[in-house]
Image 1 (cartoon, rainbow, N blue to C red):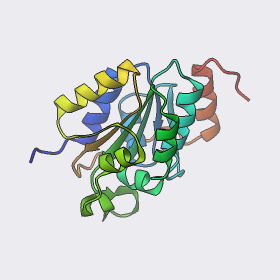
Image 2 (image 1 turned 135 degrees about the vertical axis):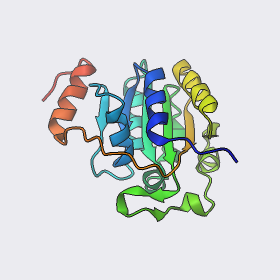
Image 3 (image 1 turned 30 degrees about the vertical axis):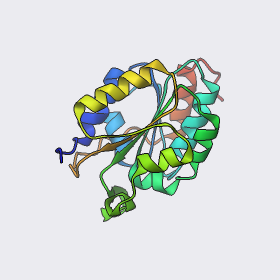
Image 4 (image 1 turned 180 degrees about the vertical axis):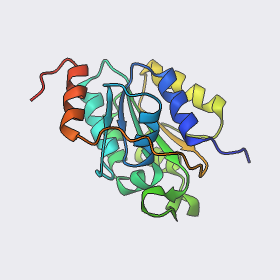
Length: 193
C-alpha cells in the first residue's frame, strides 16, 4: 500500500494544473483547501449545502460547455449526495471532472469513520451509475494523469483521491454568499443581480 496523498497539496496540484477550470467546492475541508491554493473568481464555494457540490457542478458543466468544470468535494458529502452520480452519468458532460477527497472520515462532524473506511469504493459506485471514466487516485503521478485527462474535456471523469488524515489550518474564504455569487457570475461574463 502506498502512503496516502496530503489533501491540501493534492488540491493545489489540481488547481495549478487546471488554471482555467470553473471550480465548485463541497463544504468544509474542500473549500478550505481550494481557497488556500489561491482565491480565484472562478471558484464557487458552497457553505452548508451538503451533497450539493456535484449537482451544482453538473448544471454548471451543462451551461458552460466550453469550460472545464471541476467539483472538489469530500467522501462524506459525496455519500450524502450519492444519487447525483446517476444524473451525472445520464447527462455525461465531457467537461465535468468530479474529485472526491476521500480520507474515510466525516471531517466536519467530529471525524467519525465514513462508509469509505468500511469498504465502500466510490470509484466502483460511480462506475455502477454509468460513469465509465471513474478511478481511484493514490499517487502524485496518478493525480497528474487525472489533470491531463480533465484538461482534454473528452468525457465525464470521476476520481476518488485517497488522502490522509492530515490536519491543516482552516483557510476561510469570505462567507458572503451573495458576494461569492456576484464575483462568480462576473467571471463568467454574466450580469449580476
